[in-house]
Length: 315
Image 1: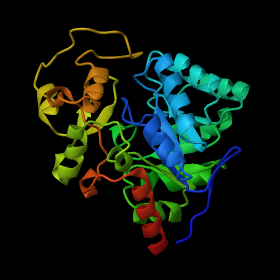
Image 2 (image 1 turned 90 degrees about the horizontal axis):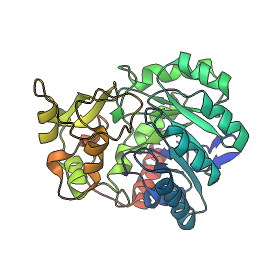
Image 3 (image 1 turned 135 degrees about the horizontal axis):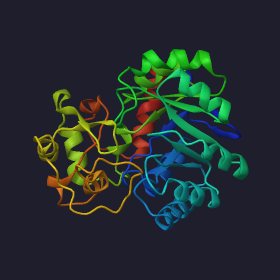
């Protein structure tokens, strides 16, 4: 199968792949730059960072690559506006956002001439995003890792979104190899977003424990947890998941108000941060897509993309 470039506003990615912005600190400058250097769209996960930390990551990514670099910030975080605005001041190429819907970000995007790409889970939300000025939408199905906005498969949602809007539609959720990419493109997607596959890359900032869990995973290890954000989250079962599932569990000793809304059962930021810190597996929440069990080796972003291109060509 031949693939076409992904065009979002004035940005043109020869490789129609967006690397997912995985928080906290899984997708940092090194990974984003590596994907951008392969002519895809690299994404830094701003969620969980301070504005200064995000600024430094953006500057590092730009030193490492002259390709397309985006930032992903979850609407649920309390410093959402500050993170998005600092990314725009640093002339980021595009802003992606999910876990809620910000009307203000479209205005900021127009003022800065920076494309806004929201993550949606229905045609209704896609239409609303287009009316408000979205340059594209990412359609994420239940197969995706992390916080989920739907219990429907991506393949069921995407055709409805494609018919409903005129802007580019990017498929996300359960995409691991080039054959998955080809299927999504045949469904009408203009491009794909891949998170889980790139979390298991050499450039990923995930801990060795996190990456080894991916390699060792079987399908039955994938589970749904209830996040303090108020959304279900898809993760790998480990000792931490077993702990938070205990009846009446509550383990929040300190809160820095990192979320706009939180049920305070446990600190999601601390749990996700532990997934990129060595030596803290008992505290780590390891988000993943539901096809994680198909990943059997840690490769460089370059080698992952070489393999993806070969598989797409064979599809």
